[in-house]
Image 1 (cartoon, rainbow, N blue to C red):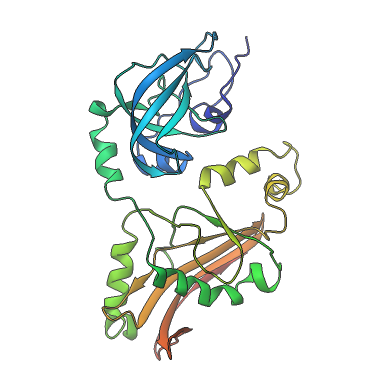
Image 2 (image 1 turned 180 degrees about the vertical axis):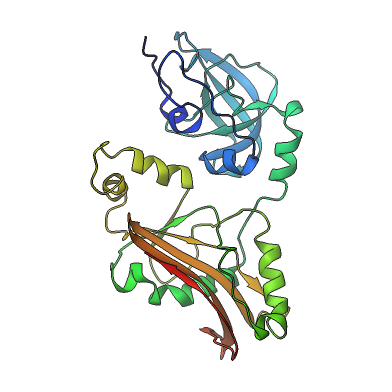
Length: 300
């Protein structure tokens, strides 16, 4: 018998919406983090039954008092549905997605705080990128990006979670000498996943969208979509030209040199990315190409 499946849990926890469906357990906290829109720690103030029964349906909705959040904006209080009963007065570490928000207690997407030490330790290293100088670096490169120059996007879509390409790093004598402090800082800044923020001046209108929401847009396309799911993406994000991913920025101690990774995806065989080195000249960031630098890029 086909079960009614939680909309948000489709992408989060289950392989199939059938009675023999199995939970997909995320062994790595970063995978669970990427798959959800909201992550917070909070106490259940009250709960209400939905009247539904079953393994993979919303059976209760809890109202949480939020103590700490790492992703999304749950506010001071937020309602979250789940496929198992909540315990009033207990504190949970909640990974939730969808609209309205929901999660899975059955598949341990959300658990009591006392059982989540490993996840909390990982979250302790998750920080938002709030340095205006980092966004100034992004802004200096955007006018030359394909999504701007060729696709003529009216609103840029950035994946919220940072990303880099460790298989395609700059090398050569400059990276071993004068640019080594920048490279070392870049590696440190990107050792854990960071979060881009809205509201900074990039020279273009932009939105910051969780990877989970981007992925859901692909799932909205028809199964026989000739664009491999991109029809769903462009239906949700028209005039975007695709989406961009960026790394955290590495600087030298004076913030006169910087390194960053930027990439874009625009279709099944459409995309590209590379690391950039920049220097600040007369108060503006300019791309640098030191002698002896060996860089690499990918394109499709």
